[in-house]
Image 1 (cartoon, rainbow, N blue to C red):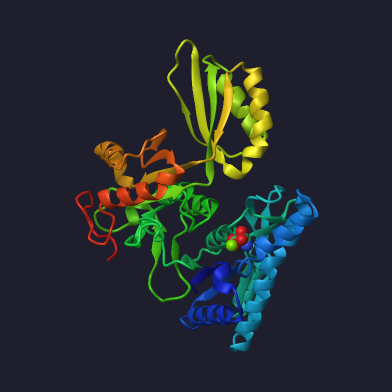
Image 2 (image 1 turned 60 degrees about the vertical axis):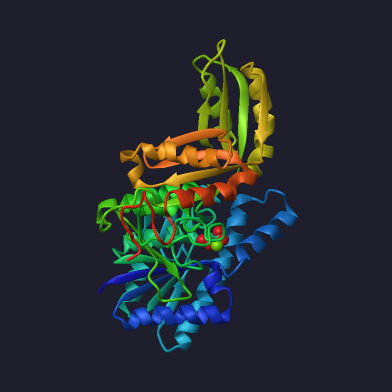
Length: 417
Ligand code: ASP
Ligand code: MG
């Protein structure tokens, strides 16, 4: 029989009515002849609330205890869903990550799945049960309960879909799919019918928040077909799949993403000699900070500026290290600027169309938006701009690249068939 994995986010299980609606959808899939595995997030804002409570008791709660606490959110959702499905007349059983055989490393708060032993799940499916699994959690090789990082239920779902050779991994959420831009900023943004893993990775790391980045990495590595769709309607959503599995001619640009969660850090006048960049990023890594978009200016008089982005809420942690560093490498100063945003254009067609670069900069120039840092991969161009310019930049780019409902000059097909 074919296995289908369905994952429901926090808003989709926020109250009893919504849990009943999820139960309906799961039993529909069962009646359609599938073996059904449902992965749930914690109800509504439960995870944030639990986190806030722990932080009111200790600024940095013990990592093991925090993981035990946070996993309780998903346990509440999973058991309530099992109760609802049973009430609808179908056998169902819920399992914690540990019970479901999700084995992780020991990195509390951001553990990685290293193995899945789905014996109990397969047994339960064999008995005809609808299986419900608590998202976002596993058990470590040291037998402690771990969590997979915020948004980690997506990764649970993708990993289970892989381990169970599921037909697809359906991610049910409060938006209808992946859009050409955030519809809150661009009202005529269009839902994409399909995006490649690579494009989705770039979109997710550029600020699109539909899927946890790690879940996309997992799906790409294992070739899991992911379908992001709304839990409030039956409309098809967005398929995330292999590039060549997408049908029809490809658009040059798939979407515009923006992110203002990062601050720009600059080390001014660092000596331009071997070992300096290594020293900087060794120190940053030692703080466990994730770094994005590194740019070094051309060298002048043997000195260069090095700029990069770090999450805004980690600036405090970086500051003491950065000051020591500036002294150690005898650079001039350390500057942090939290008033910035990163605007990115993503599309598999960028590599074959170098004119897109000029088009992007021209669009921003026409809007009198100054670009402070630029970075590009073969399928993404990112520009750091003033935070106040973020939304205007997104709208202008969306228009320029014809991403709206009518398509445009740079769009070679309409992929929302
Ligand atoms: N409940 C967790 C969070 O809010 C995991 C998830 O929703 O995927 O981050
Ligand atoms: Mg959540």
